[in-house]
Length: 136
Length: 136
DNA sequence: GTTCCTGCAAAAGCTTTGCAGAAGA
DNA sequence: TCTTCTGCAAAGCTTTTGCAGGAAC
Image (cartoon, rainbow over all chains, first blue to last red; front, side, top):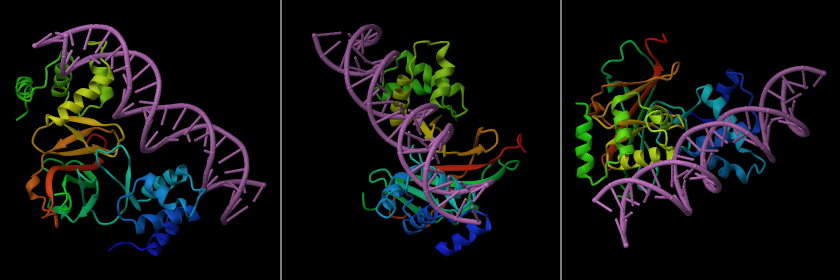
């Protein structure tokens, strides 16, 4: 159920977020590069096509998209933020050797927290670490 | 099954990590303040007792303790690292309103990743966000 | 005496902010 | 015209590194 570019444009319009050239390109990059890119990667990846694009705009855009619920920041122990197009909740696995982040499916409802009955849960993150098959 | 100060001293000796005054105080702070403190909080908390303590030493000590497996860095979307005495795996819940991080128990083995059969999993993190009872 | 530890200062790296100019409605 | 968006430059924060002095064995 991966969202298409058109799906997302519709959602942005519905939320009254203007669809500037830069924003659309950043979204396009996120859709085509499902490797949980950093700001730096987005910047480098779009630099040939939009030489004037600034990191400030990338930060601004990612913040807006995150507030709109279209993009999610991945939580790892890295200090550099990584972003994901928001889809169904899935787990992330980071290989300690090569650094690649893999997605894995997980039945989120099978996780039964012991004592959060009086809490309102808005977001669930599953993050595993270890070694990937290639590095083994 | 919370480790005591003595437990940890034994483990450090076993791993040939020297028990300097600063390191022991940092450990003591972590044991007595199970609020997942930041480096800043440790620094402020120990400053009265050890006015000369530097953040460099705190960073060094936390790195050594983490490598020894005695301390774990919590993964949140914050850019500031938070630390925990390593115990059994448990989940962390951050309240979006007051910022407090709560522990919750979770049966880690009930989480069945879909397609990681060829991966070696070394560490599992569960991180929820939402609102705590007090802020509701 | 040799090794390891501490801590000041500086550097590095990611992110945010201020602001002026450009683009869009 | 008025609002919003972009992007350069500077600032802000956390973390790391270099290095000299000190402690421990």
